[in-house]
Amino acid sequence: MASTAVVLGLDFGGTKVAAATCDLDGRQLHREIISTRSDEGGEAVLTRGLDAAGELLSRLGNPPLDGIGVATIGVPNGRFVELAPAIPGWEHIPLAERVADALGAPVRLANDVKAAAVAEARWGALAGADPALYVNLGTGLAAAIVVGGEVVTGAHGAAGEIGYLLVSPADLDTSPEERPVLEHIVSGMGLAAAGSRRLGRPLSALEVFNGSDTDAALAAVVDEFVTFLSLHLVNLAVALDPERIAIGGGFVRSWSRFSPRIEQALKAGVPFPPVLVPARHPYDAALLGALCLGMQAAGRDLAPDLSLDAADWQAAAKSEEGLE
Image (cartoon, rainbow, N blue to C red; front, side):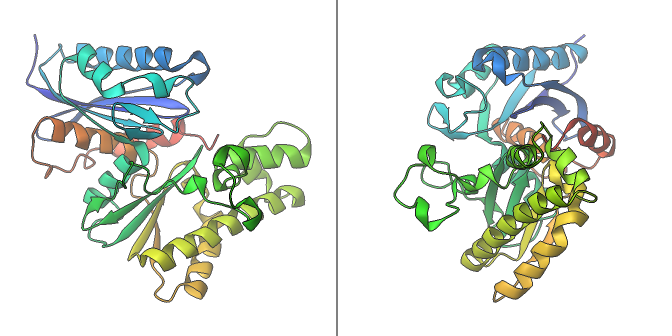
């Protein structure tokens, strides 16, 4: 028998798709995480995500669905999602429309890092900080700017896409497709590629980080990674004057390896250095943000802290979210 109405959150990431439900009081009910398998293409990824959502709703007896929040890699811009090469064909799918048609409820759509920043600004490490910066270090690299408790979207939804930043003056006047970008260096995929080149065999980002304690070549790769990250965070902090910077994503498990260097750079290079902190929800903030979007789609008050009963989710999310 169907129970009371619920809200659904969907997070389409580069390596995993996560789905979760909560009731209208903000109590989390069930969650599901599956591999993205992006090589199968956008249509297959969407179908598998919708199937996971349907399974969650079925476990609850198919209750009324009042709202859906969708977080996605890339930049939602109009009907489509741009700048999402990790899922082939994703840019051709009118994502919000397809999810609404399939599940029969209103949808709010956002970039996954901006959704994560919503959760951190409301209930996490950025609560009360104004302005603030959320940086996601995982498979890719992106940031979100929080002003007055709201996430800045930008004219085209691309505010905070720092993965496209230039890495050299020689790259001026060239398109992102024709030049290196910061994400090629400061990201899980960038670190894995650099470590693999250095040792001449395939390595994951986690293996590069773990190996850097004993291998001088890998230590040099990680040092370059942290140096580039520190440089650009200093520049961002000078430009934005944030009160606080929170870092989330898979790299937070290696916080002690990179945070001291960033803190040193911020103190030395920023007139009014911000406080650097790990995200409160480094592995599942985007999913919490998607639930928040779902509450908004349902026209509900955002007062409930959707993260209060998430301790068991945190352990599961940490084990499922790799640096790769």
